[in-house]
Image 1: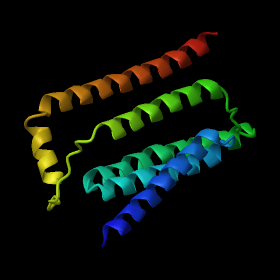
Image 2: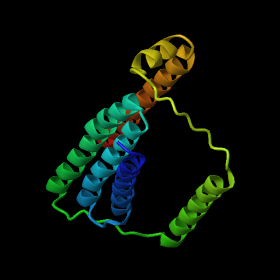
Image 3: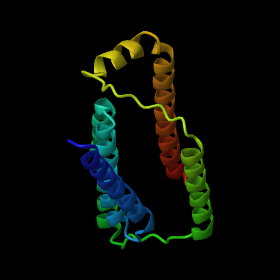
Length: 173
């Protein structure tokens, strides 16, 4: 495939990602926002595939689409049925949000256009990087990996304690 075809594919997935993310932010219906988030996650995964980061793309789909988004959708739909209310959000704080957006876009454009020595490589990565990630995770980066797992375990224990403490506190009343 030619460079023009690759550019068209990249801009197509970038547009899908950006427009669906904008719909997530500006939609007043929570369910529409959640389904737009699905397209955002898939667009990001497609961009990872485009960048030859297959492992990160599959992880993106499994973790975010398969886990977090499904959990979010079930939570929203069950809450909607139980409470029988229309879930709507108010889009507030537009001015600070637009100011932060302008600052981030301005910073990115400044970095992109003032730095002329972007390093590109003509060689493509061959094979899968999963084996290399596994070796590095279990050898050189085993301490940060284990520290992150302990931190997540402590967060889980803390959340369970807070949820249990709240129930016990409400029973005393």
